[in-house]
Length: 88
Image 1 (cartoon, rainbow, N blue to C red):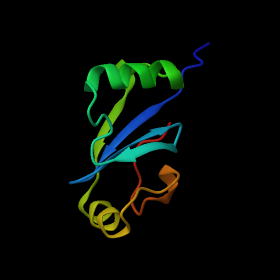
Image 2 (cartoon, rainbow, N blue to C red):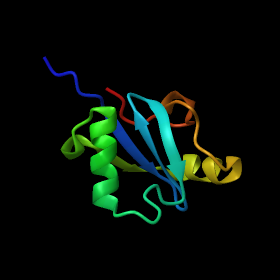
Image 3 (spheres, rainbow, N blue to C red):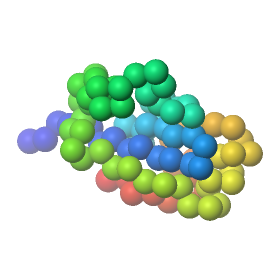
């Protein structure tokens, strides 16, 4: 039985965020600011129990990208987007 969480890195033109099982964990212009990106995500994978190799990385479409830029932050859950993204 696989007890790993599902992680999603969603990126707008200027920001990015990490969702675990559809819930917002962190957001920012660059999540790993002043840290090595690989080590940063390796630590998050251990902390939140997800396989780094299975991290879903997706660019927001134009509709959500504009919406995020206007709002200034990402929704608390992936259900909060105007369009839908892969959620298992």
